[in-house]
Picture (cartoon, rainbow, N blue to C red):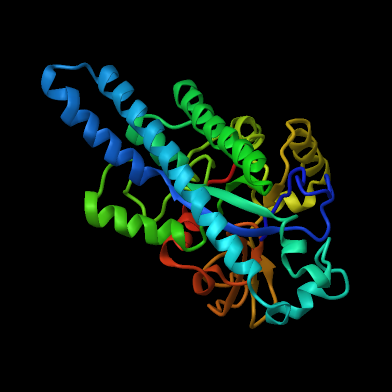
Amino acid sequence: MCRTANGWDVNGLGQLKDGRGNICPVTIIMPTLAKMCYDQACLDIAAMGATQEEIDNCAVNHFMKLLDQKIHEAKDMLIERFEWICSQSPKSASFMYQNNVMAGYVPEEGIRSALKHGTLAMGQLGMAETLQILIGCDHTEERGMELAKRIEQLFKDRCAEFKKEYSLNFGVYYTPAENLCHTAMKKFRAKYGVIPNISENDYFTNSIHVPVWKEMSVFDKIDIESQLTGYSSAGCITYVELDSTVKNNNDALETIVNYAMDKDIPYFAINVPNDTCLKCGYTDEFNNHCPECGSEDIQQLRRVTGYLTGNYKTAFNKGKQQETEMRVKHG
């Protein structure tokens, strides 16, 4: 996986990175849980003349309890998937168990000997929308960030407990949700309709990312997301969107990268659109047609999730296409 990270291996390989990876992820769709809990809070206390703050607090309490339950259910799913994978013959993916590709593999002990060093990834989707549902703001505001940290601490604490109890490397994972961002939103809309600031778009926001349409500086985006990336031990990414002209400004690029490193961002990327006319070869950022020859035969190179994609309009679903097109440049 593009954003895979591996924390300390409880089964003997320590902080070794090579030859390990995410064995299986499970993703919790948090906005759906939040909407269920907010609606329940309204039923519980709104009729009693409760204030908006009291309703929000009730919804948050319901949500934290339900999220904890779903984290435990996700743990059970991860263990079941892990055991099934371990039951397979090495011949099912022989390359992975040859030439020391997978660290720790002992043929006589089967593929579990290698897989036990990998990560069981506890993923999540839609932090921004979850916060909007529960308290009416996202983590670009102080109140939203406080709740976001509380949520991430629960994920981190539970993964630490599971890791100790089962001797498996459970870790918090900020899911890229290439397809899930759209399919989960379609199901949400079918049940709850279009809700301002929550389900207006065709996708849920990627993990703990700042909503892509929010205008802010490069440094502000890094400042916000860096407060949450430290909770993840199974993988995350923070990226900023810049104009194509930045390619000619190495000093600016170095300043941005150094700033992200100083904030302990584990995986940082700079997105610079790069369009190529397949007729005349002209390259720049121009999207739909070539300014030189007018051709619409364009290759649009974008980082849609963690990796570069040649043509995101054919490689990704409607939700990811819309998200990519809604991204604002960070000044």
